[in-house]
Image 1: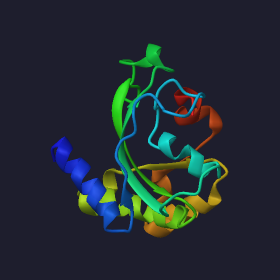
Image 2: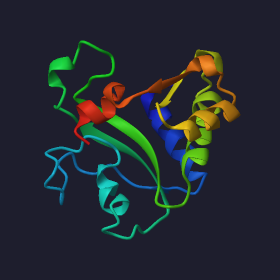
Image 3: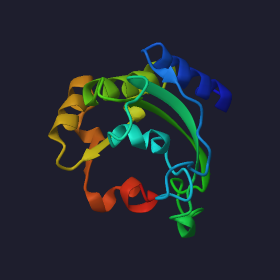
Image 4: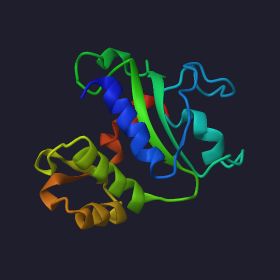
Length: 161
């Protein structure tokens, strides 16, 4: 698939599941003095997650343009370190949680994108038995589930979010 096809299929997949399509927010967050740049898809939704603002919808989907410089020295050393990229995301504001989110993630990558389950691995936070059991129920074998601790969570350590 070409990038535009992936974007379109992701948006449509979650729109079909009741998500409101929200456009990408600016790279410089408007009312967030804690960030210089939008570094993740959830940034524009922080006021909802923090409970400061009531969301106008229960579910959202977006393809967020992101800029990260917190791990600039690592760009090029690894395939997971970038400066500018787009982050697809589906978000729930009190409507659903892990069970639906993980099942939909699996359905999207295996059914919509056609990736072979035999080539996929998942990770869960080391103490998150609930997520581990959900992945097992979905059909992911134990050998393809990796429990990771905070020291291995590059999102938390490197992104600044």
